[in-house]
Image 1: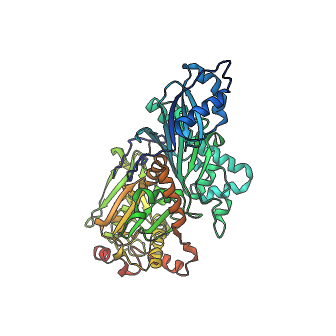
Image 2: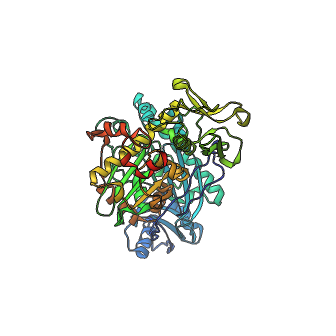
Image 3: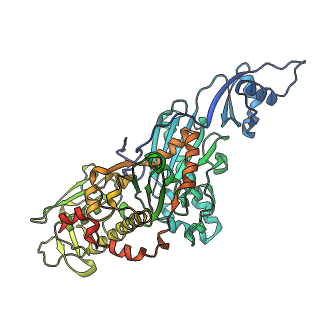
Length: 536
């Protein structure tokens, strides 16, 4: 596993995750450069420039190629610029998408993880498969809503809104392209292929396809299969003839990002029973092995990114990222991002504080504060009850940083959604947590959270920690793999067609299981035997 964490990001210096577990693939990109030398025309040979080029390429490649119109317009000047020697860029042995004078070798691709919250982009050299630059930023669509449902509702209001949403994310990606090209001293005109992964709503909006019906029962996707679209149709700032490849979706709320996760972890080829949890505003869970894979989506919300928490914030400088409480005197220790003076709590710290409050008996299994404990840090007052983590004299905000009774409730609901999804998948396969041999936690949150504390609050099944592996941004990894290999794209197509989607709302036990999962770690102690020993 390779995880790279940049010290700064483009927005408020937020720490964003670039890389993750990635299976090695044999380099077989959709793009290749072919150099040909043409015979000059004469009075006895008046063949057109286009036919002269295509005939020479057919002799060299054995393929009858089509020609992109933008490339066609360049041909008369380009073939004469370097003594009739040219480099043709060919897509999938089907189409000439660009032509350059002389002998050229520059051939780059761009992969993007289009997340609800963030965008992560990677510039790759398609000649050797190396990442030459990467960049990340917040998804500009966040101004239209923190979650996909809010953005879909915005798109539903009037037809122009879908274009506004699409333009917003395309602008964000173009900025990543510009940034990575500057870092690597590469011309964006030499980016000849593009691949992206995103949840179904982000996938549709990126392509300009209405996402409206994804939010309406029975939540169908408009498009499930992969698709190749000209980059210029989407106003992407790369080579005019380049194609954009969108990884396929599985269902309305399980998209190409989940397919990318499956590709990167390789669980679709494994004998061992594995569970993959990609934690985010919308959490995807996949369970199974090479024989069968099932998946579901959980509306976990943005709480694990610091949203809807009184003193919550994203993982930027000054965010408290780790917390521990002394059970004897209830004093609090903490660590902040980059060691700055504390400003608030990011998602990993919120999980820590709920687990620490539970271990210290400051809250009970229902999540309520214990009124019988006497400490100045605990202020009891109904929903306004709170526990002080940082006194105002020590904070950079000149106010006490606290976790409230309502904050705890928000986390209980978020973690219950994830656990319930995992439990229902286990029921569908007829297995228990004892049978799961490997647990993959994906996404930025899944990388920084303390795995024991996440299990203590009941976020995921009671699986031994030695079976848990943090895999980072596997959505980005899967997108890069597909960029590097057309064989991987075919695998992605097969995965999307074979994974069985389970709609949690259709399960008759969903509400009952969800309510039981709101307890810490769970209402039924036998679901978490190892944790019961810690908190009882």
